[in-house]
Each structure stands twice: as C-alpha cells, then as structure tokens.
Image 1 (cartoon, helix red, strand yellow):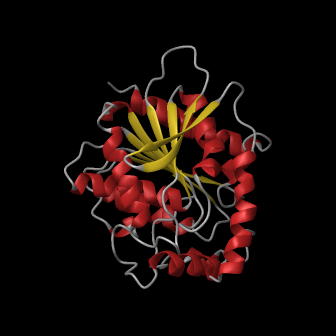
Image 2: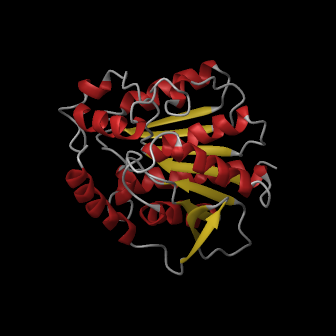
Image 3: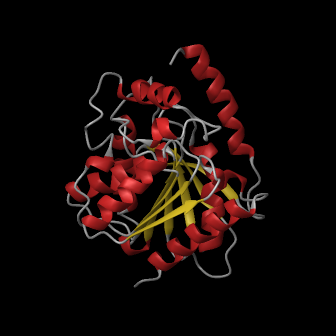
Length: 279
C-alpha cells in the first residue's frame, strides 16, 4: 500500500472518532503498560460491573484509540462497564508483531488492577483478530484470561485462505480481495501469515474464554468468523456466532440509525454483561 493512499485512508477513517457518544460520556488520554490509550467513562446507575479493553479496526494500518471510542462507549454504556480504547502501533511504521506486543502489554497491566473475571475484550475487524491473538498470547504466557471476548466482523486469518474473500466480492461494498491483501502485506512486511499472533484462526483455541462473533452476510471476511466458530466449538470453547443477513463490514458503526446494527450492539453488550456477572 503506497503512502499517499494510506494517508488518504487514515484521514477518512479518523472521522469515525467523531461519531456521537452516549450522553455524559467522558474520555481521558492515558497509558496502559506504556501504550497510549483513551479511558472511557459512561454514566451508569451503579458502580461499573467491569472493564472493557477495546481494540479498534483498520487493517493494522489505519485508525486509533479515538476511532475506537464510539463503539467502545456504546458497548460500555449498555453493559455498565468502564472502557479503554488502545492506541496500539500501526504498520508500516511498526509492522507485525507490534500490535500484538502492545495489546499484550496493556492486558498484562490491566490484570494488576482488574479481576480477570471482570475483564472483557472486544474489537472490530483487525481489532477483533487482535483481541483474539492477545487472549491466545496471554494464555500461552500463563496469564489469567478474561471473562469473554466479542469480535465485530473480525479478521482472524492473514493467510487469506477464506473462500468468501473472493466469493463475496460482488456482494461486499466495502472491501475486495485486493484491499485485504494490501492490508495483510503492509502489516506482515514479509513476516509469516501462518504465525498464530497474526492469524489466531490457526492457533490452538483450547481453554479460551467464551467468544461472541458477529459478522455480516455480505462481507469478504465472512468465512473468518464462520470458520473460527467451528474451530472454537471443536476445541470445546463456548462460542456464539451471529450472522446478520444483508449486513456489511462492521455495520455496527451505524447503530444510532440502523435497527440491525443497534440489535447487534445490544446483543454484544448483553453478552459482555453476562460474562462479567458470572461470579
């Protein structure tokens, strides 16, 4: 991906951070484990039930903690959580595995202050894949695992082996196979897409916490979620897959105007509420 195209995409994507927030939401610049972040406080009638670590989308090359705030705040407000949106490093300036390293360090720091039974992760697109890669890395490092994970239109396979990558090209108005390939090449920078930190779909999933995977039926990344759901079930992981008919990539961004997106965000928040309330 050339620098001029990337700069234009980054400028456009920055607008996602200006979408409306739940009334009374406060945001504060902070750091977690040395990684910049935005702390999000939403009005709740009781003390927050837990903490949400949110990882924004953008193909590992676009976006920021601020572009993740609107969806993180929407989930937090519905689930009664405090939240933090992480500003992990982006490619090509910081290629693989910088994003996973940052997310794991932030997660490790959160464990010092948050009961893992009250800690959940969520992310959209690449952020959904990064959330899963972070939990896999945490398990492999012997860390306590969170109570659950939500992935919105998650990108879990940087080997690009899903049939929907080409099979859904005509239906997907957002991406085609060439777009996804460009993002993968930019992030990997010659690295191996088979590495589980890049493609957590290929990881051993045993022992992971409950997962909720949401995806639209018109996405070239549809198979990333459907295949992950089957593999997680085979590994005895509690997994729920929600496919929204006619929906496109991270349709959740339109939850204030689109009933389908609102229904999906409500479902994701209900899942997070259940997970932090289990104990």
